[in-house]
Image (tube, rainbow, N blue to C red; front, side, top):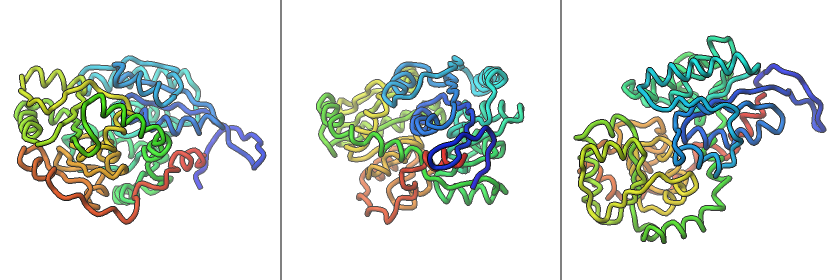
Length: 367
């Protein structure tokens, strides 16, 4: 069992260690994760929530806080745009000031974004212990900023919460074995929590888009390695245009700017729409024939909802989805994408590698 600091308070079932946490988030996947952890954490502890502003527009930020009933951030740092170095530097400076002001026992960071790296660095330099939720993931592609972020964060962290056994084994290979726990995936917790709302939402949403269940393909593209390369985006557009069923394509603001700059042409069956909230995205995923994405979180959400996924990358940190046959790494060649979409639906997996839906409870109970 993990050990912790702080004051002990009495309860009807024993002693609970009452502590103060600073949780740092800044992007869509982190909003989802903190939603399930925060509600349990605040039952016994204090939490100061810091939003770095990495995703700063309504579609990528405020809507998620509203839908997921996340408490309003105690600090909004407005560190939105800029290069990776400039953005991370602004976050590091601003987070350091927050941590100097807010006396806390632990700093919690989530996932693999610049917000995660900046939070871990700021805390470590102030000798504050860091807890990393979603530790141990590796794509083994150091050209991805996210890979650098997750590796550095893991090696700075004092407590590491792994979503899968594969993640724990990777930490062990890197020599990280102290205060490591496999707790499951908090995004699975979130899916179970909000799934009762999805059926009605899905019906209304599909009707508004003019599509039917299993009668469309859902596509998302946001990684800079794809969006910043006109040739890659042209190949992806070729594949989407060649598909024989409707394509719903919620477009990240950054991706939209790239599409406009490249002046790509789209067939009528490709619907480019504004970004959708978390619940609408889950609803679109669950009713899709296939999901095409370069997002790690969407790969996993598709898997958990039983929808085959085609990943527009050469590697993934969620290797379990590939090992079970539910995720095909197609890369960005248009013919490979079409072949992957046409592949038969795999057999249901024998078990869920992402836990029992109680990851947040396991995390909070570790203190």
